[in-house]
Image (tube, rainbow, N blue to C red; front, side, top):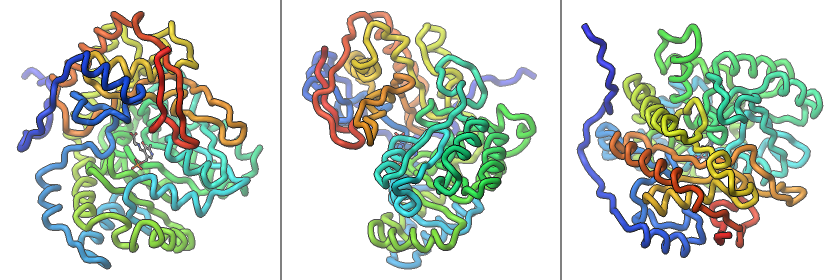
Length: 459
Ligand code: F0G
């Protein structure tokens, strides 16, 4: 019998949300008014919104049913225990603290373990993680492998930690100044690239040798698990759930934005084995987020996360998810559009520096490209480059990014294959008329996380 090759969306659509076409002229006016920052554009003025895969998932009928069944009791709600059980089932971690999203977990964690003189090591800190580390007074150091810094180098696990450099750095800084090592799976800022099980195991070994706890930034743990299944020897016959459990078995704690692989629109958690740290974290939680059994979320949100965590490790779902990104990547590569290869788990990263070689790095080529995609096709992506890298908190100098990327993040279970075909066509058009794109000058910036509110002028 012939093997069936077409991978379909493993769901049917029960409810639709209209999206609106506008004209290029209209969108160019919108851009100008928005200071060439797509965060300032109203969502209604966007046709295909690839700004983020965070909090933008379509929930399942099962999750909506769980929402209706949510228990809104202030303390000890049934929904909390469902949530706690679901998180424990996957992570195996002892103490589960709900937060309203990932950065709230980061804020609590780094307020306790961070501070002046401390260094946090990661493969690559995501921008909110870096900002929370630095806000505490600590330093954030990224030690991803060399291949992870090069858009076109092929490597199955470009998110891996550089183990030699990790040990060297620990020796240089001194283990007592390193409160924890946090591995981001998948490595968002580095292109949504996975981390191998072997690398997690070895990172843990080094951490253990020096008495440093290892954490996971687990936002996209299920996508990472699927890559391990597909690419790492010995895991082909394991389920994504089993692989996820093994990934978490190496860590002492985790922060998670459930807005990604929790398949929900809001929520997150901090999970810890250390009881003393948990005590401190719960105190801070009550100050800023809420009581320890809801942490800034409604009971219904907790119920939806519990269901989402079950659904996200289903193999059919992950196969469709990872394939839909790869599909776009293959089409763009055939059109000679430079992207990070191999494609990662949640987004396409266009290499704007390679594509717009006529725009110098200090004129934000990735920001300029993101704006042009919006002008030509109503597509909203996001710059992951020198604007996002911000200034050095000590020297206040601009920190040039290693890569100038436009991220087109694909929301989970939201867009169909024809939406993706449209995105490919727009990129092709923009690429063919790229000489018309000009650079940008930043004319306003906030002191932290400047890319959210920066304003630009065309050069
Ligand atoms: N860590 C990673 C790797 C992330 O990608 C994000 C969010 C966070 C932490 C923070 O979680 O948003 O729930 O507070 N990333 C989103 C994105 C914003 O678009 O990639 P949050």
